[in-house]
Length: 102
Image 1 (cartoon, helix red, strand yellow):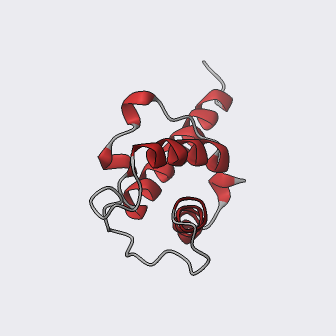
Image 2 (image 1 turned 90 degrees about the vertical axis):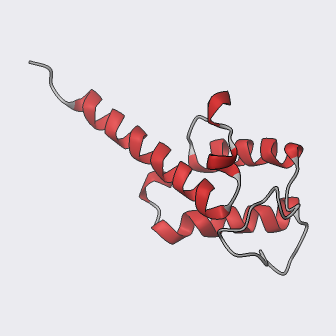
């Protein structure tokens, strides 16, 4: 389950997706995790849409239109942080739903 994966696994899955599906590279992701996808030309606007779809399918989180920003989707580090935040919020929401109401 996505919410139970190891912390580094999120970055690794993001790197692997970008390398194979957007860069068409079998050699892996050749950039640092802080490198801007857009500034370096790693992805374009269509690539951002593919990243959104990847995040939703791979990690089981919903991405709302206003969340599709450079702050959330412009580097491996930013995207992994966004995913962790969404997974954490989902866990908190599930825990709250299971808490008996007084």
